[in-house]
Length: 590
Image (cartoon, rainbow, N blue to C red; front, top):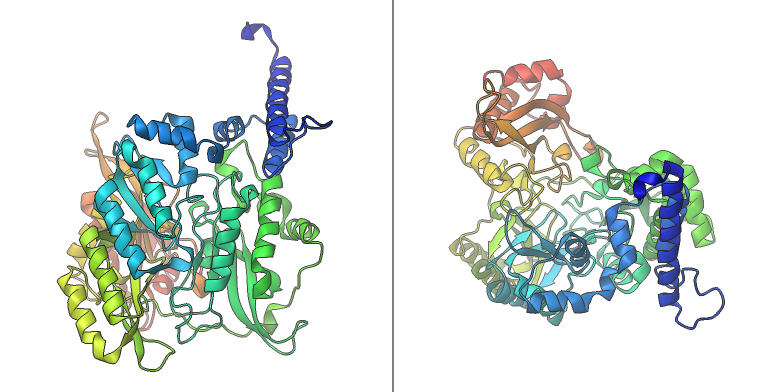
């Protein structure tokens, strides 16, 4: 029968059916039956209204929007429990819904769930990490991964243990809610908050406030797409706030500004490095105590204006591209009910310099006599036994805390001088390391094809192969960051690496049209963050994974041989050369 309708009639009927769905949702949120109950109300109303507006404009909602409207994920926990009881994995709509609880069904790469936690500002206690090691042993694969959002993931979780994991995480005072799908992801903060020598502001209370706001305000879930927020306090370890939708960047405002002198957050908006954009300053500075309130208003505008039809254009960047920053901020001010403070950049003092190796090794804290140790993890992996031992070292040698960083590693703070040697030896005995080469210090890799259905290559394996091959052949005298990501979601942020690799399927025999494909990469150079923020340029494409180590070696050797001075960074070196010149350096390898 559908073939008897014109395109205009089909659009009308689809909109009519959508209106009925909204009416039903409105009635469920207002069960009194009072007049007007059919209109959306309650915490989901802004989302339902935004869906209806876009349909009225002739847009067809993405499937994920329809699934959210049919049944909100946080209303479906009873069904998740029933699926776990039957040892049953979800169909696509529920695979999407269960991500709201932090559960990702990662088939076909693994017939298992991955569970992602929320750890605001990357702060976890020794007893929480020890308890997580037990959760990993009882319900998952016996290991965890540190992510590029200073977070932890547990993997290889069978269907029957889905709710066991979620509930066990909550039992120890942590959460996995809102850590996937169309939600505000783990809030990152300064890794050395509270003890960093150079920090301007301790970000922990602000990250914590935002975390609990997101957890307890339902309107903050079900956004047009995922959303990232970061707080940088001026510490030596980069937080990468410019890769986030909202970046709060601690700055010192000078006395001549139009606001009183002091430490403020500078507001950055629109970062999404996987879409080749870094967050930009808005001219706005704010009292840090207002950060959660202002972030809430920004998210509410995004809820109203974000694209719910095209998932590829459903991030804040595209709202800003369409509206412009000024128009967007005007709507934010309307939500707030007052104007935002703006100052000229000339009234902001230079920020403290960052150290690209401050997340590795022994470093002094601002507290006299105390140090922290940054551990090297093999591309972010920790076995459950290593988790337990790290927890024990934190308790026995440090202050009992563990800090996760966006560089896929962790810090052990509060170590007294008389405990440093013990901590170092115990770290090494656990099969970990506290020293790193200039190559391994900046080596980042996402989950890759062994655990993610979207990845085109085994990223962690490739990263390890690059390190193992290059370390004995190239002696770097300053850090070079190598980011290896599996797909265009760019979880490893390949565009901001000095050298960035993104997975690709490559013909094993390029001269044979029927050749099988193997793991490979497209390679970028010249990316950066912070003061050197830049999106890398594509150098070569379709490099077999087996050839990637030699290609990286060629680039690094050319850099050491041809740089303008020993102080010239790899990024500045590549920026000073044409693409053709750089390509000649890897000719015969790529």
